[in-house]
Length: 65
Image 1 (cartoon, one colour):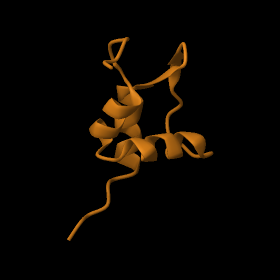
Image 2 (tube, one colour):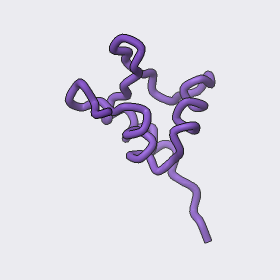
Image 3 (tube, one colour):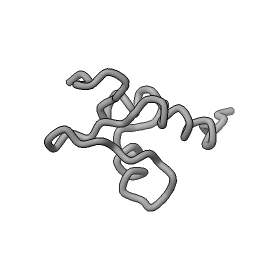
């Protein structure tokens, strides 16, 4: 599935964009933290790219050896 609204990503696209698993996207979304809230189109959650980028800057990925 592709994003239905320009500038927004589906869960899989958000996961790919952030370099995390889709399960992590849903887990982060379900926790009370500063992960961006999605916009729902019907039942489909879409995350704004700009807010995901801002979140990633505040939470850099883990460095792997």
